[in-house]
Image (cartoon, rainbow, N blue to C red; front, side, top):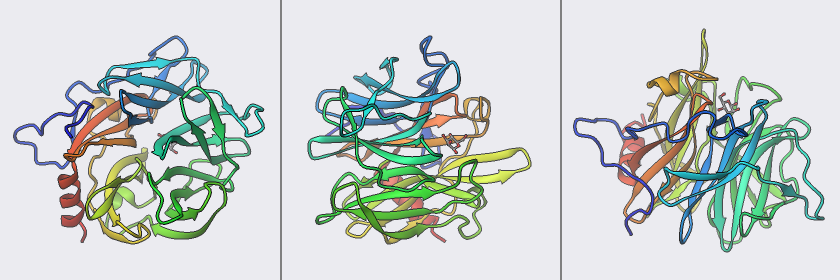
Length: 320
Ligand code: BMA
């Protein structure tokens, strides 16, 4: 079925596998008096709308999570009161800040995975049925960890999860691990999936982290991820792609040595943290159209377009 979300054809003369929306960024600074910057955010298509969990930095610079809805994926109605999360016993989940959400649906439940600081940055999984009441599951992962991504279905009786163990600060290294669980609370059988550095591939030589929820295709999973390079002017965050085995995603079939996208435009190169493209979600329809949502320079939210075939071709052709 054709997409319900906004998607643009590849511009004539474009030789890239991913092309930016011409009117980026879609969400700009000071969206509301309560949200100064909206960037690394997660979206998902439901039956009648597109929903989003947004990372918004408040005017005191605290990162927090906000819920929003859209008809087209570009124009968003965002509730700036912020989502409130509860422990299973009904008491509030207390954290200092929360950021970089991912969003997926399994059966009738939506799951938000994000990093929050309770005793240092750690990953949490929250379940909601209606985007009104948010219940946190038991803490599945030890601190410190970031970039939690839950596969959108079970593999036999197991859920699969990607994460990037880290440290308390601007982690100087980081690899992607895959873990499994039968109940979304007890996680184990952790395996190393992908490392940084990788071959002669400088854009991803410092650290990497899973991006959007992986996209299932007829013969593999597409994993869009971010990779970081360290320069004398600070860190540069780019976007890349790998293909994982359809039945056993702990096997990497192909991984692009080139980046898919690196900061090039003003809104990616200038902002609170310059030189950052940070993907947290990708909408995909039955015809293979893909719209990637990515944070630009930790300041605004942007989108870029591609297709299932473009990403597979890119990963396979650059897998050297
Ligand atoms: C990472 C995360 C992201 C951020 C990126 C660039 O460590 O904190 O939220 O976009 O750094 O600042």
